[in-house]
Length: 177
Image (tube, rainbow, N blue to C red):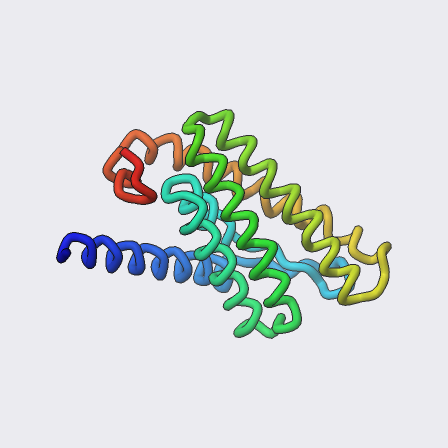
């Protein structure tokens, strides 16, 4: 029984650390762009999101990404975006984690990040369409979203290539061995 409690506590701590890492990288490592209706933002919050999703799976990816970035929206003055971010980035983390739980190859990681890019572009396009009531304005944010995921992929792929060799990093998450 104590082992079960420790495992749940450990999972809670890992989830909280993931949320904190995504939040911190989004808050402190970002550049506001002078394009799009709201200015746009490029940040490195996707780096810990993708690392967590790849190593620890869909549940941790969804929690860390969705909550971490939605929390940034709430405290960073982007409050209107928080519900969209929670759903879109949560789905990104879930998708990356789900793909990488089944396949642990570099090709799978690249495909998972491509899927996350698709979710981000389509999701935020839809969110901007809803917020601005215009289907043309959201097109201006697509390049920033592509750059954001591209930069994250360039950083994440070499890191996870090294970390995946250490089975202890992710052996307890989701019952993996």
